Image (cartoon, rainbow, N blue to C red; front, side, top):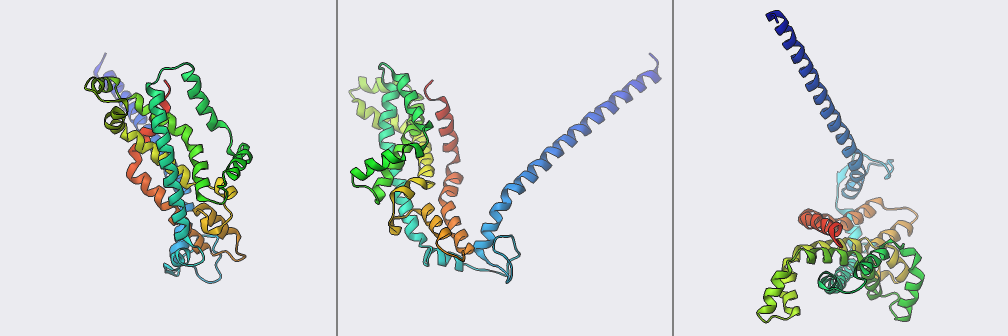
Length: 299
């Protein structure tokens, strides 16, 4: 092969390599452009609530659309918290319902998850899938019998009834998550504690539970978000406005007035989103662990 032929072959290879690199760069650029447009598309709906809650709109401009604000103000938050929005009462009720339902669900699922993780009995696997099957049943299909049960217990129009109902709905998933985390704790640690004279309750409290604490945190966060977003059950059980939770307060503010105050509504919406946002920011690693445990549970 002559020198000229070698140079031509090398030039052909370099040309093909350059074309391949340019094509890769164009593909990467196209992906980033698509992701950027998708991010803008998803973030624009959040821009309007912020503008509406923190600013005053110009005259003769509809509140339903994006606008360039005249000035910034906190008046909408004042109206939402201390005015007709009654956000403090709504937030207090929502926090009570959410935290109480998490505590009740956690108490049941800690004991139940430990029993399903360590216990050996007939139809154990069938019981686990039966518990999971409960989640498939729509809540609207069981609302009437549940309402009759709550009425017979005298818990209609009470926050306690809402707590019980939300806890019943979150227990099946939390049970799977807790079992998955208890399965990761080696049984040898418990056996060593039993040899030293510890009881089963002591090993659960002093050894198993601390090691499964990330799972407890993940399950608690998931249960809190589910309870915080509950709307249908409080709508069915509550009739006293002083006992409404935040989703019901937003719904009431949306339908109660002929001329809607979008600034106040969006201020209430931002207050409603704040706890979930803070939980996600500070505890996202526990949410990832909880999701993985829920996927691996029952194996």
